[in-house]
Length: 337
Ligand SMILES: NC(=O)c1ccc[n+]([C@@H]2O[C@H](COP(=O)([O-])OP(=O)(O)OC[C@H]3O[C@@H](n4cnc5c(N)ncnc54)[C@H](OP(=O)(O)O)[C@@H]3O)[C@@H](O)[C@H]2O)c1
Image 1 (cartoon, rainbow, N blue to C red):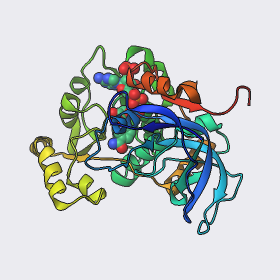
Image 2: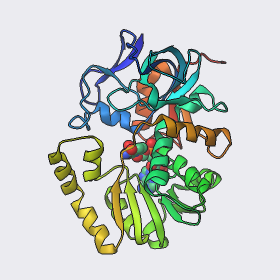
Image 3: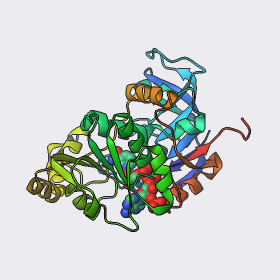
Image 4: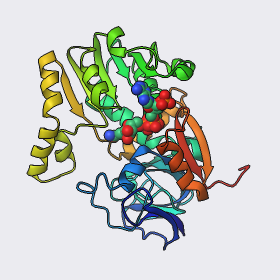
């Protein structure tokens, strides 16, 4: 089958190749990929940024988001059959959506939302799971709470705005001038144009901030929280909880605790909290999210779709910041279907 492989870590480390179809374990489903979503994480894994923590055996197929059709079902799998349309963010160390087929642990898979095309569904799993894990699992957002979502026009931000709004929060976001209309249509109540205004000068009293920019943006985000409020960053610095999540040795917990010491100290001085979040594959959360897409509460925002053979161009489009808003998808679906 055709696939895009990471052979060596680095900018030019991915190439198109013909590889054997994956073997299907007892707990797996084999999926013929219809479309795959691009995420900044693809570039980071390709560059080897996580190689100390996620020990991929090279060569491996890249790609963290897929939608497609089940073509084989492992002997221990219940609840899926050949022909089912599904979507997934396969778990770490078993990614590989940039290929004609992928074997995925059935626990990571959910039925594709019926109202979405394969391309639309491929834009959903990683960002929607991240939004769920931030807002529902970690922060337990309640109606009436105030949530600031940075980078609201991005793949992640555009999803977090919608889910926060659905949960009943008042939502503020940062976006550039041309994205204001889009982020308002997604549910943002307050829009700060980051090209003109400093959000930390105009916002205050927030219960939760999602930071996806890091550095000074994260430090300033602490100042808009109310006492006891929570800043969650998805770009770091990592904390000890992340090492625990990965099952890393205790020493890694210490390393990560050290990396986040400064920001945790700053948070403590302001009477607020800081946490790092690295999303996880989860098929049952994807089922709940699927229902929200089918009921129209959430919608995917798609910047552009590339044919599968242009996967490297699609990755470059994201990497070079050429997206106007939302997600980039590669499609195996022939034109007109
Ligand atoms: N830890 C996790 O589990 C996890 C999960 C998902 C994502 N992430 C990370 O989160 C980040 C965002 O992911 P994504 O998929 O949303 O990327 P994306 O689709 O490329 O979006 C990035 C967005 O950031 C906006 N932006 C840039 N500078 C900004 C600023 N100063 N203020 C406000 N917005 C700004 C860009 O808008 P312009 O068009 O104006 O440049 C763009 O809309 C990535 O670093 C990704 O790796 C982490």
